[in-house]
Image 1 (tube, rainbow, N blue to C red):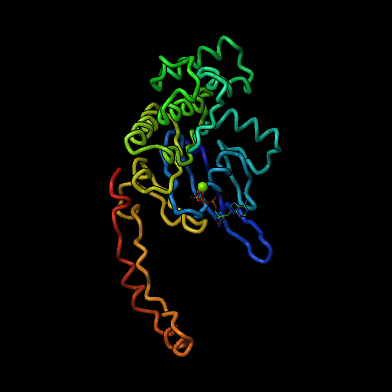
Image 2: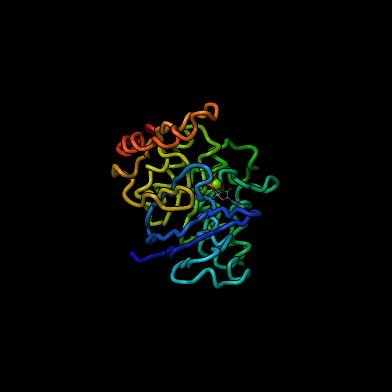
Length: 276
Ligand SMILES: Nc1ncnc2c1ncn2[C@@H]1O[C@H](COP(=O)(O)OP(=O)(O)OP(=O)(O)O)[C@@H](O)[C@H]1O
Ligand SMILES: [Mg+2]
């Protein structure tokens, strides 16, 4: 299929006074054309950092990001904007629709930036809105739609430029479980039509809808593989018997005995999230 996205030892560090936050810490991975990959991890694990780098919204502190073979770190602002417009379709938790524009106009926006003529813009916006099941609402305003419908508009807007990659950051975060399933179904369908989909989520049951999971912890990849393999599921955080924070009298002894419980915790895994 060919590699579309490649991270080589990508780091993103934030220096905050004396401390350095390693939001991405030597991340290496490849995503091929046509894959459906979920990047999953807890809050603060570095998902949005990765999404921003993949989406050419930000560049690494060190390491290399190749998008379709181009070294994104070497591009200037204009080139980044150009590659973003041409290669990427974004879907966010907040739909970011323009309230004064009707649906067809909302979906046309990326094509305006791309310099597509009016007639073609209309036609493509209409087609893609029809494809997400909103053909009967072309002239409605976003606030006349349900949350799930609004998210479908934002998916249509992401698709209309025929991007190489669809990047979805917590796309179901604001939706109820039924509507979430619908939106995930739509992403799966897009994938089955040949699109490359990168889904970012903290929710394991959602991540398992993808074919492959890349799990992050503290800015590092701790799992990369089949979403149905046993290793894709979460390590249960068994609270390791911490040194009791009792009064200082027995501090040193408590700190010395910390071998056993961790070893026991290592085998414990659990099916993530418990189904959608
Ligand atoms: N602009 C910034 N300045 C300083 N630290 C930052 C900045 N952006 C992110 N971080 C830190 O980098 C780490 C990773 O953040 P990131 O936003 O990538 O996490 P996330 O996995 O997307 O979390 P969430 O699920 O809460 O959205 C966090 O510790 C965060 O506090
Ligand atoms: Mg985030």
